Length: 284
Image (tube, rainbow, N blue to C red; front, side, top):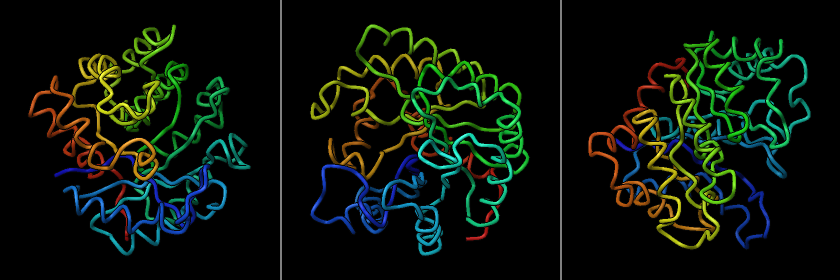
């Protein structure tokens, strides 16, 4: 079984430059088509209520109802673009979200300039405590500089499984690349912190240069540390600006030849399937 840990879907394409097919470029039917074409069994849609898509949680919930055996919703709760970002009452808003949408997980985007202190503030503690009690998975977009604060969350909430988007924002180049990788690897000591093995086009300086051999060292180092506490993700449809959905799959399946066959099976689906099976039950 192959499960894509990181997809998006929108009623209106949210990004620049504009596309000629704004109402279909990010539509859920495009995702289902690519899954069927490339042999992907299930996908988690990471909601992002941005720009013309402030009702993205509703859009994805409706898609999950149409494709209940193929899709899971990771609802957007208080991400950096929202008016409620790190405002009081986050735990209550999270609880209300679970009552409204068929979500086994929530997603939360952290602003790059944020120092991460909210994670361990009274409001942040209540928020993650509520997530743990509800049986949710936390799917979080954050940078390497936030990992120290995240480790405190993972230690305090051992039953809360945490997925870090796109290798936690690592880069393959730059003066701080090695230091950042070491910081993220430190989090592998916490069994409830997982990395999304995705975003090759984000780690490189040349986004067109498939198969991104310059990023290999980052993935290899992280694999040595995290092992099967990694989950493959495509970043479809955003990934289309750099490579195809199939290439995002083969980037891992074919070109990460340092991963054992058994571990590839786990990273492609088994690990995420176990996390989803342990998460809260939802009615789709």
